Amino acid sequence: MPRRSASASSGCSGGIAALAMRRSQDAGSMASSASPTETGMPASRSSSTRGPSAESVPLQVAPRRWIIRARPLMPEPPTPAKWTNRPRKSGSLRSSSVVLGSGSAGIVSSLSAHRHPLSQPVTDFASVARWSGPSSYNPDMSTNDAPSREELRAQVLLVDDEPEHAEVMAESLRRPGHVCTIVNGLDAAREELLHGAFDVVVTDLVMESETAGLEVLALVQEHQPDAETILVTAHGDVPTAKAALKGGAYDFIEKPLDLVVFRNLVDRAAETVLLRHRTARLEDQLGAAYGFEGIIGDSAGIRQVVQAIRKVAPSTIPVLVTGESGTGKELVAAAIHNLSKRARKRYATFNTAGQSESLLEDQLFGHVRGAYTGADRDREGVFEYADGGTLFLDEIGDMPLAMQPKLLRVLESGEVIRLGSNEARKADVRFVSATNRDLKSMSTAGDFREDLYFRIRGVEINIPPLRSRREDVPLLVNHAAGRFAAEMERPIPQVSEPAMLRLVSYAWPGNVRELFNAVHRMVIACDEDRIEVRDVPEEIRTEDGDDDGASIGSLAGVGLDRLEKEAIRQTLALTGGNREQTANLLGIGERTLYRKLKEYGLR
Image 1: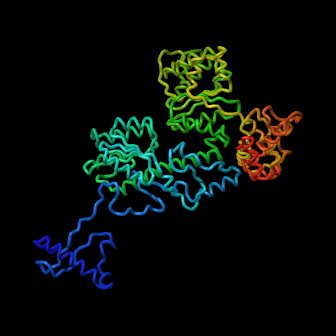
Image 2 (image 1 turned 90 degrees about the vertical axis):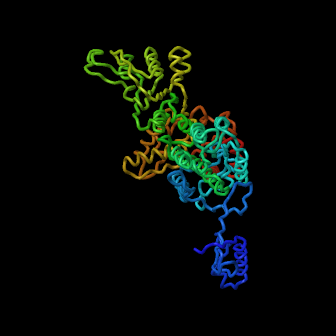
Image 3 (image 1 turned 120 degrees about the horizontal axis):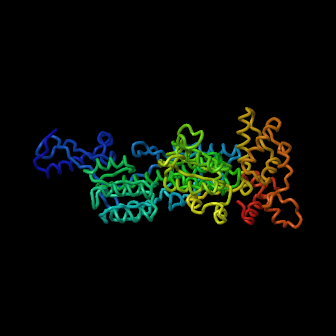
């Protein structure tokens, strides 16, 4: 490479003159040497006759670097039109099109074809993701699933012990609409994470201590597990930052910051959180339509049950499942186990009803050899069998009163003593119980121990009876018909509207268990592939109605508004909430139906 001139000033003059000469050349010459503006790269000097040397002297131009400023010196690159496959941790961030797919419209149409529509679009981002932008999302997005700028407005916590540095970062994030909170150390960050709600946390790695940023990361994972954490680090701290990625950090960025890169990194983290919540919400809707852990229904009551299961499953708190016989309490208990951290461990069920105290104690706690006549070997009880997993005690309200203190001791100590032994054995179980009785009234009357009642009722999940959620009947009927038809290796029968209306109108005192039994009989009785009114069991077909007005029976003295409301409610249930079909069946216009729905408070 030619030596530089001894005279820096003459070298610079030669470079300027050479640049001027190139600009005056014709188009052909210009095509052979692109300018810095065209290429985005530093220009080098071409041959020059000026200067102390006849050789060409290249002009070394240092590349422009970004430095922290409130406004970048260079124009910002345009935001990509679509986010795709951004790097995240050791894998890759899936875009909206990957998470939901362009076939989300097909999912919706498929559900509609099976009369299991996604009844509500995703409209409540604020309750789960805390976005400050528009809270509406239509899962039927077949063209472009990328989040909009408004959707990516996130709550960002900035943790930095240099206020000026934090303010510059905040200013760069506020411009696209993010809401920023600034704190200057670990203690302040802990306070915000305890009481605030954030989507992205940006923290300096080294503050009052060299591990302060890692401590912030641990706090985020403990108190805000849905948030993503970005570490800001100096060059010498890169190995520590890379290690933090394995500990759950989203990414890190080195100082001095490139504000455009920084802002895009925060956008990507915000998009990750947004897509995570979108996916969870879509899973909830699919679960409502096709069943969540075997629980079929889309009524408000069933959605509350599913939400409660999701909340309590990760913990170890005792759960009491209540509801009438046949409502599906066993399904709720199994769902709690399947969604818990103990899902790979044993799930044991035991019915306490109709058993004597001595037999019940033996079944629950086990015995040692010689404990009683016929006990020729040691045997573990159901508590030991379920060690590390979940134990479901059904009909706990029927447990003998004398047996209840022994159960309470095991639940409080986590230890069991086998019959005939004095040795306490550890039994680590997640305890779930169920009853169709009113334990609170029983405890007041002295028929159930109050201390045991409060012990097993850490969280109570009540399953509503089928008569109070009639909109779930068509879903349950179609599900059961498909199941039994498959068992019989025959086509799935369609249920006629008159037959379905009769099923919706019935009180179902036996709840889902009775409904499944009735559908099984109808599938056997029906001709070909259609269930008619004649196939409905006689006791259901001739039922006059129930007390809450599903079928009003005698019309004497009944107000017309009540009749109208009941007709609309039943027809909505029959059509699965389809307003167009409901209006057609009732012989009214959709606008009239909409007005009546508002008037009667129906959905």
